[in-house]
Image (cartoon, rainbow, N blue to C red; front, top):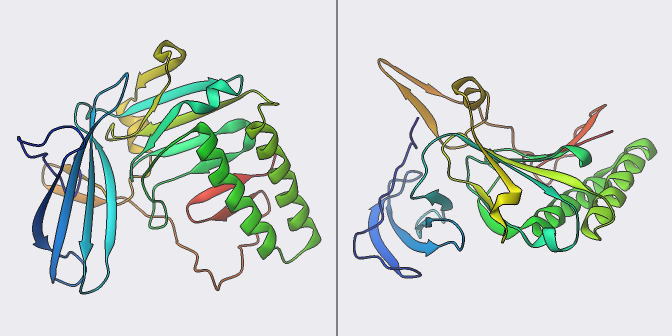
Length: 242
C-alpha cells in the first residue's frame, strides 16, 4: 500500500525548517505550492507536514507523514487520569480514531483533516460535533441523545471516567505518544485488518489492479443532521448511542 501522492523530504531539510516547491494543482490544473516541514517528535521519530495551496481555486490540503513507519499500525492507550489527557495524538488523513467507551470515532474522508493535538484536544473535537448535532436536532429524542453524549464527553475531559483511545492507520502515518511510551500498546495490523480500514485520499496499488477505497459522504452545513437510530454523524465523526 502506498499514498496516491507521495512526498519525500528534501535531504537538506532540518528540524522545524520548511521547503517550498511548485506543482500542478490536482483540482484546477493551475500552479500550486507545496510546503514541507520536517518535525522531530519527542519519544518517537521524524514526521513530515505537507501542505498544498492553490491561489487560483483556493484549494488547501494538508497531511502528516511518518518518515520512519510504513506498516499498518494500531496504537491503544488507556486514559486513567488528567495527566494522561496530555498524551500527544498525531492524526493523518488515513488515520481512524476511536473511543469505544464514548461510542465516538473519526474516520478518513473529505471532511476529516489531519491534526496534531493531545487526547484532551480529541475530546474537544468530539464535544464540538456533539453540540453541533444537538443544534441540528429535529426531535426531542435526538436532542436528548446529543445531550447525553455531551455529558459523557465532559466527564472524560474532567478525568472522571477511564476510557481507551485507539488510533489505527493502514499506512503507519498516525500515532499516539505518551511521556511513558510503554503505556501505549503498539501493534502491527494484519493485512485483513488494514484492508477493512478507510483510507481517505489514499489508494491501494496491486499488480494489474488499481482500486480506490470508498469515502464517507460529506454533509453540507445547510443540510439537516441525518436521522440515525443508533448513531449521530457529522464531518466523518460518529457518536454511537450506548
